[in-house]
Length: 156
Image (cartoon, rainbow, N blue to C red; front, top):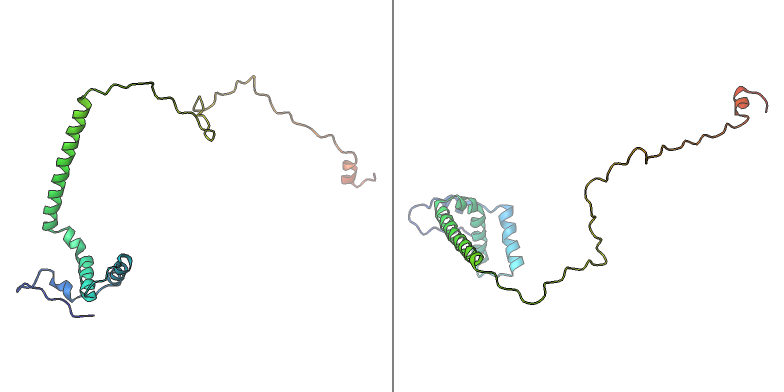
């Protein structure tokens, strides 16, 4: 790999130790994936790979940084202002009288052939009354002649 970039500050940067690390498999894979999927052709592929490597390595550190906290707070403030404006607009629209409708009311939707109407009554069906329930009839087979004799060893 090409030599690592140098920091421009005279004092060591707080994250300078990341400049000396080798890229991980994920960082190498992500670099190739970005180039393949976007079709981007950087002038200096080594600098691009180094940028991707540093971005992946320092992403979570950046998320927890005070600089990101300030940016996040400003973003949340803008979101709150937009939400208040949207709420005020909704209140104004609700107070305005509803426009009068002209013409016939809209027709009810016809049930399509594929659709089946919903059942009229939902839930469990009513319990059957005892008079209505018939006991199942048990059919008895007549005894077969000769079985008793065969079991005892007698002749038929």
